[in-house]
Every structure is written in structure tokens, then in C-alpha cells.
Image (cartoon, rainbow, N blue to C red; front, side):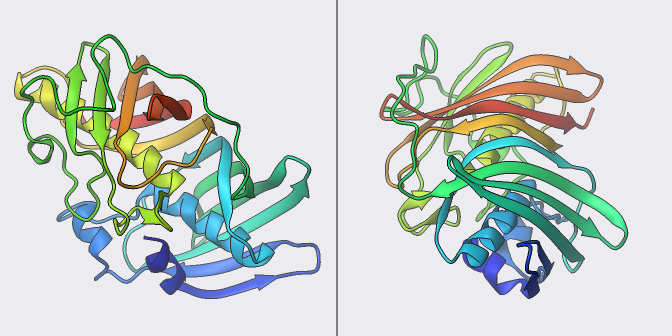
Length: 279
């Protein structure tokens, strides 16, 4: 994914104040559009987050990790071939680089983002985390749930969960092991944006599972915002990740959920996402 982003950058300018303006255009033939979604391709919100990160890395000439996402909103679907303008204002502080960004297609704002980036050695340290009474990020599925591809609309290479460990009325625990050369990895670690996508796909899997029984919504939906999401440590490839998503509330077709991601019993990320789900 990281290479697709770099290849889709058409131009980039940084002024003397550090303000960045760049233009991207993603080739409709990219494999990611075959997986997100077949027959109705759109640019994933998490790719938009990674676009902003890549531009700040380019400006600072060093790799950066996402430490905290204060608020991100995805306001308009972006489709293959759209010309996307990204405007960024950043400020280097003691605790990292504070970033505010706007993505637009033509005159329409497609997304906004506020986050903090830090150098790769920055981490908040390990935090113990359990996924619930049955969930475990160290083993395989404990119940014979359907295959993930029977539950979600996503397809390779943009499938970010392997299987379901547990489903209750308001929660899902899923698991994913990324390979070192997976679409969502870079330098043997999983990109932070991809962790958000894994959580969103876990929600889609639960919706798909409920829909099989004639309850709940279909598996289709759209990530519309991310809020107060902290990343505590880097997620390693080749080691299982546990993904716990808990529904907090629902207003109409909008669901607000808490996300907790762990690896080797230590917290990797925790925060809130909001999804619009099709009835």
C-alpha cells in the first residue's frame, strides 16, 4: 500500500512556513480497488490517513509513526481516477509532529484529519490487555464461525482479518496475522492505518454474521470517523493480532464503537471509530 501511495503522488510543494500541498491520483487498475470494493471501488479512508503520513515523512526526510489520531472525518467517497488535493499544516513539538490536514476533490472537502506523528523509536510502552472472557490473540478460532469472505464485502489484497474468535450481541473479537510482505505492512511492521481497517472489517464481519440469521444490518458500510485513537507500540508482522470491537451506541445508521488491538498480550492501539452501515 505504501508504494501505491508514493506512485500515485503527482506533485507536491512545501512553502517556507512548512505548509504542504500535494496532488494524488490513484490508477483505477490498482489491486486495492479490486478488494475495496468489487464492483463499487472507492479509496479506503485508511489510505487517506497514510497519504498524509507519507507527505509529512517526505517533508521531514525521515520515517514517522502515528502516535495519536485526535479526529479524522471521511466526508465524501473518493473513487479511482479522482484528483485529490491534500493540504497539510504541521508543527514539530517535543512530543512529536502535530498535523492538521484537509483532502478535497475539486471544491468539495472529502476528509479532514488531526494527528500526532513521532520518530520510529517513539513508543508509549507495553500495556497489558485482555480481549475478553474468550478472546485470545495467541490461538485460532474457538467456535466454527463462517469464513470471513462469506461475511464481508472486501476481497484480497484488502482483507485485513483472518477469522473470528468470538461474537456476542455487542462485540466481536477477530484475529489477523500479517506476513512481512503483506499489502498492509512496511519494514516488517503493520501500518497504523491498516489496524484501523482491521477494526472496521471486524465490524463488517459481525454485521454479515448477524445478517445471516436475518438480524441486524448487511455487511456493507463506510468508515466515517476515527477519534482519540492512541497507538502504544508497533504491530509486528508474522505475529497474531487480536482485534476487539465493542459497540457503544447507535444513532440511526451510524454506529460508534470502541476498538482495542493487542499483540502478545500487550496493547497496540485503543480508541473510537464511527461507521455508517447500510440497512
